[in-house]
Structures are given as C-alpha cells and as structure tokens.
Amino acid sequence: RCECERCMQGMVPYLPELIPHLIQCLCDKKALVRSIACWTLSRYAHWVVSQPPDSYLKPLMTELLKRILDGNKRVQEAACSAFATLEEEACTELVPYLSFILDTLVFAFGKYQHKNLLILYDAIGTLADSVGHHLNQPEYIQKLMPPLIAKWNELKDEDKDLFPLLECLSSVATALQSGFLPYCEPVYQRCVTLVQKTLAQAMMYNQHPDQYEAPDKDFMIVALDLLSGLAEGLGGHVEQLVARSNIMTLLFQCMQDTMPEVRQSSFALLGDLTKACFPHVKPCIAEFMPILGLNLNPEFISVCNNATWAIGEISMQMGAEMQPYVGMVLPHLVEIINRPNTPKTLLENTAITIGRLGYVCPQEVAPQLQNFIRPWCTSLRNIRDNEEKDSAFRGICVMIGVNPAGVVQDFIFFCDAVASWVNPKDDLRDMFYKILHGFKDQVGEENWQQFSEQFPPLLKERLSACYGV
Image (cartoon, rainbow, N blue to C red; front, side, top):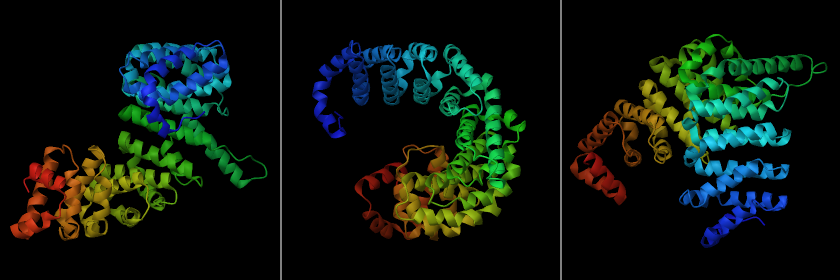
C-alpha cells in the first residue's frame, strides 16, 4: 500500500526498527519481496539521510547496490530507481562512498539489458547532479567514462536510446567541468550533427510532406541540452569548439522553431554560451534580440523563462551597447512582472533581468521604475544571496539614483527587499546605505519616524542594526 506524506510523521517512531527489517528483506529469497523492499525503502530515504550515516545510510546503500546487481530484472529495476531517489536525498553525503558506488554502476553496465540500461543512465546522471564537482577525480573519471563512451560509440544517430544517454552525459559534463575536456570534442561534434540533421529533415518535410517523414525533434532538444551542459561545465574551454562549428547559425534556426520545447532548449543554450564565450555570440545579437522579444510570452512558461534569463545574461555582457534593444524587451518584462498568478520562478527571473537591464542602461529603464518597483521587490526578497541577485540589486540602486521619485510611493517595499540580504558585498551595502540615508534626510527626522512606525518589528531591527536607520 502506498504511504502518503501525512502518515509519514506517524511512522517516524517505528522507523529505527522498521528500516533495519526492510534492509534485511532486500536479501529475501523471493524476488517480489526484494523489489517491494527497494521501493518501500526509497519512500523513507529522506528520514534515512537525516540520521547519522553509519546507522542506516551505509547499510542501506550497501544492500541496495547489491540489489542493483540482482539476478532478477524486476529487482534490478526497483533497486536502480530506489537508488536514484536515495541519491537525490543524500547529495554530498555520498561522496565518501563514490568509489564503491561507481564500481557497482559500471559493473551493471555489462550486465543490464536494454530497458534497465535506461534506468541505469538515470541513476548515473542523478549521481552526477547530487555530488557535483566531487566527481571530478581522475580515478572516478577512469571508472565512469570508458563504458559511457563505449555506449555512445555503439549507438547510431537514429537510435532513440541516445536520449537517456545524452541526458546522462549532460549531467556528467556539468559535474566533471574541466575533467570532461578529454571527451568533449566527439560529444560536441555529434550534438551539432544531431541538431543539423533534425533541422534538415524538418525542412525537407515542410517542403514535401508527402515524400518525407516528420523528424523526431527530441533528438535536437536533447542535443541542445547536452551542449548547454558542456558550455556550463567547460566554461571558457568550449570556445575552441564553438569557433570551429556553425552552432550559432543552427541556434538562430532553433530559436524560431514552431515547437516550444525546441525554443526553450535553444534559449538555455544561448544563455550558457553567452556566459562561456560571448565573443562568438555578440555578432548575432542584432538578429537574436527581436526573436527573444517575441518569446516573452508567459503562455509558454519555460520558453519565456529561458528567454528572460538569456536577455539578462546578454545585458551583463553587452553593457551600454544593450541600449538599442531595451525598447523591444522592457515593455513585455514589465507586463509579466505585474501579471497576477505568474509562477514564482518566472517572476524571479523577470525581476533579475529588469534589474540587469537597468544596471547597464539606467537612463532607458529608470523612467519605468514606479511601474515595476513593488512586484520587483516582493519577488526578490525571498531568494538567497547570489551573483544574479547582486547584479539585479545594483541595477535597482543605479535606477533609483536616476529616478528617485519612482520609488517614493513604494519605499517600504524597497526597505524590505534590502533587509532580505544576509551579507551583501561591501560596495552594494554602501549603495543601500546611501539610498536609505538619502531618503531619511530628504523627508526629515519626524516624517521618517512616522514612516518607520509602519515597519514590522523584524524589519525595523535589521535596518537599524545593518544600516543605522
């Protein structure tokens, strides 16, 4: 029977006895019992990880890894899925056991038949996502890469089994970073080929639908995602690969594809290439920006999200040269940030991109301040300190300098957003300090007292402790 989350709390007192019993069931002589034990244990992964590792995590992992090599296919499948769930919960707790885990997963490569191989790819990809750069050790790379590359060479370009392998490699490339360099060239080339072949087939099909089959665009989507993984993992090292390929031309076509998922992956790749090797992207900006503007349509959430993010990354690289393009994107962004029921991630990305646009082109964006400052502040107060938040807040500070009147009506929201920072960099803290004190001096001591009476106690406390207002 399926355990619901609510019953979970009621189960907690029994888990210290139940978990060891279930771990014993993993060795039961009946295959069905073994596979159900895998599944049931995966439901309690969260609790297992919250306890000292030697108590439950280590014995559970040891036994689950044995089940991954079980003689029964159903048990292999259940164990592999359960292990992927455990990886997601345990994350870096798995680092001490990496060598042992990789030995098992690589051994399973030789043992698994078709269907379970697909689940194995998922377990490897999830492992890479969970431990990240800890995977970038020569001994781990030596274990993991040869079997993955062997499969990669075995599969034809038309084989759908490439999808899960490409997804898996994308996670591995991002985790290994420079450790993936020796493998990147053939992987990069093949992704470009897959995109090119799919585009060519789509063109033939559109011209002669009676003579040609429609392409399976998933090949292109997964290839674009792996290229993103390479760009993110290799950073500047991807530059030589981009220089020797026609990826920017292909990207221009993919960004205009009729299928939203293709556009979504294209804009993600555009953002990653912008961060990794902007000189190759810059010559295309005049052609790309109008397409990005057209895709700021919240009807397709993920497309809109990735287009918004890419515009923010491009702004940071373009600086003042972004000026000619502000008009084609800003009105859409302001509309999206003011829409009711916009999903949280899209709101955050929109706010960050408006802030970044304002940072590089304050004269163009600041006049709009009062049209977005309130939702801007409320959507960014809840995100953790990071680079993106940093650049967005610098932008808002510069814009307030240009158009202080734009923020007066909603100043309490700005105060609240400033207080959401745990530790801003010194120069950003100074910007906040100047704006808060400037406002206080402008309205006078008495008005400021009245104004700050409306503050919730916690906000009052933080502002007085951090900024002396």
